[in-house]
Length: 291
Image (cartoon, rainbow, N blue to C red):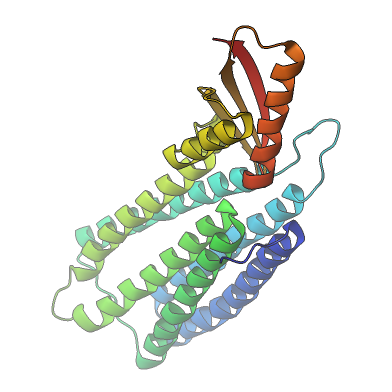
């Protein structure tokens, strides 16, 4: 059975991911830039700045985690959980800009017949960067699966984009002397992958913000709960879902026999709402209609 984390545990895990990312990216930036400076590799120095930019997305994760953990107030009665979704959209836009830079630089290299050339020290630093950045990406994806925080998944893709850019540099080192165009072509391929990751990240953030319908599995669960709680077929329909981070609101309509008293109808709706909260942790509001 999957471990269920409390709100504070999820917040702590998100903070841990953010600070680890910032510290590791800072160290990687230092080594990459130093290696690029010593060997004279402009490509590696540019890659170093890309690594440092990853810290920006981690800072956004920390800020959004702080905001989303605030309790409901008069101005935000449903809490601040959507800060995580807004953060995911921002990181998705940053990913899109990185993809654009990849594409632009790759086209320029193809036009100018440029290949990547630098020494053994820079090669080792780049290889280590690939392993470390993919490790950070995997850690970010793991924290996303544990917490459901979409901005952590977006941050993971940001780390992975850096790992992929380092892989391109390595391929350029070993294959560039045989195929001058390999670096530029791979750069274009990766830019498309990053654009796709940016699109998915932005979509996952905007869908709940714009409003969404429950998936088929959740709808079946809701109908089963309504059936078991009321002891009759209620034809649950017109279901709307509103996500605010961990807090989820749901509205739905049910059909009841025409002669049902208001008191009885209200009791049936209450039972369904309570069972939805107990079994799905969703705050439901049920509207009753006569058959």
